[in-house]
Length: 315
Image 1 (cartoon, one colour):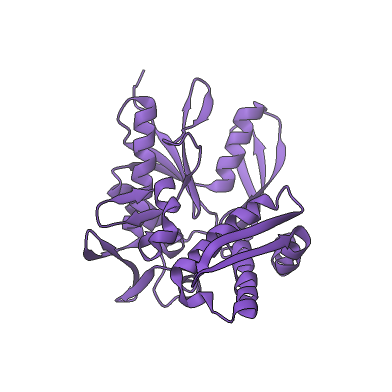
Image 2: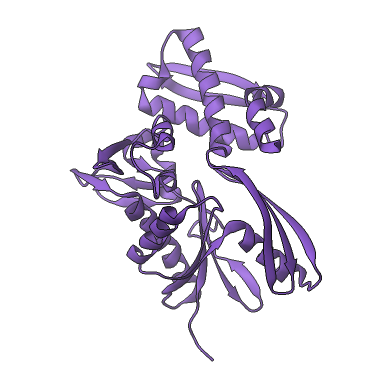
């Protein structure tokens, strides 16, 4: 029997995870913080490169050199409308290199440029390393899951990133198909089933209808939005509090990257809390020019801010 072991990597816009199938089960591999998902964040400092939780935790102090959301750039040209729209929400710099987007950072006191593929390979390599520590052996093969809307250039970009990370891609699998396979493995059923997969991620929403019977998965219909996800809900909340801060103190947070990022982090936490609470307090000490910012947002207000987004998801 072969001793080779392939892993599965779900490279997400906001979070990534890695799994291995062994002992009859798919096991999600924890990271060094014992979390089963790892932020798709990379930070560059004067001394080192940080990936995952360590990168995300220091973003407010190093926002222009902490990179996230770069999966959105894979397979795109700099002048694409989606790239131009995403750039407005990022604190780091994206430059035009012959109509290819590259991200500029300061790393070890030098200006560096990275392609989306290079940055993606860093996340994939992190997942590979986690798997090797967990399994106690080298890993060189992987199955990569991708969104259903990925076109041929985006698929190739993922494969290129995997090669840079030292991985041989056995198969690129659409995320809803992976969910259907996981459903079958858990339920251990051979009967024909109609399955609806609803996937609301950090930057996109996908709804897929599949029929699964024994080892055959038949995708009947897909629909979705490539630029609608959890990050959009956070951005709406950020805009709401920026307006409130401007109204109260007559100061604009948009031109202060550190203050903007601290507010963004607080809104991301608030969004999660609102899933189980009717309201949440926003408390940020010394947000800008010595001003302590305290406010509150209710579940009803959050829904009102995002009602058009929720309706488009339902459609």
